[in-house]
Image (tube, rainbow, N blue to C red; front, side):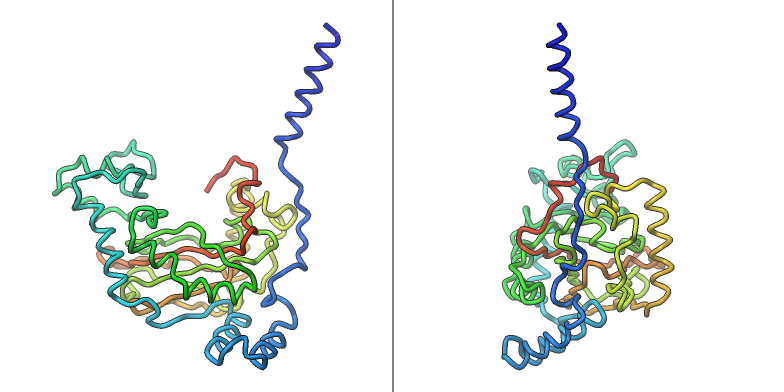
Length: 321
């Protein structure tokens, strides 16, 4: 019996150790080239060697200093219209799309945040359209269900630019198709992703229509990407981050961002249809207030991560995001 008890204790101790969160000890000096003190000197050498052209040089310089750059009219209207037609099909088709869920379109109060498409299809068409036009809905990972969305998600030109920017092969990660302004609180994407080494993360925001100020446009704070990681997160990032932290830490982080953002220029992003925004993973951004609930803010958002640098599967839950 004593041997059995001893064996049980060893097994329990081993299981407890294996489930404990990992201590990461991230090297915060190991950053992409654009975050290093000699970034602009490196960029000058890239231009001299011909590895970047004049237009790329201007965009990359802006990225180093401001934390973002834009491509006007990069995605043509025809491609965007095909994507929007696939989104509209969610509400008009009578055939449920397997695996598809719509976030924020609850048919009844008891529904989860993500509603299976079957729930939408089971509604009378009139009720579907009422829900479509009243709910603040969005769709995650729609590229799995829409060839037009997949084509933009996998755009070779954007991926080449991302790889040139990161200095490493770029892997596209996740996506959200928004129909309305998100009104999302200020945040930094690095605190939602688990990327090691740090800052090998690029946000991509594609405008699917001309954005009006009343629709709750994206806002960001130019140059805020240069700020260090919030100290309570830095102590064991990525295990400790916005997805895993306590409510108290999350509240302190929100307050911290508002104090930091006040030091930087607030940019209200009002792009034309087809314009693409690339932004740094540490750039503070969010969704501004929607002042006209009838106005849409159609957009397609996803991210690029350096190949092999997404560590989310190694982060322990529970998750609160």
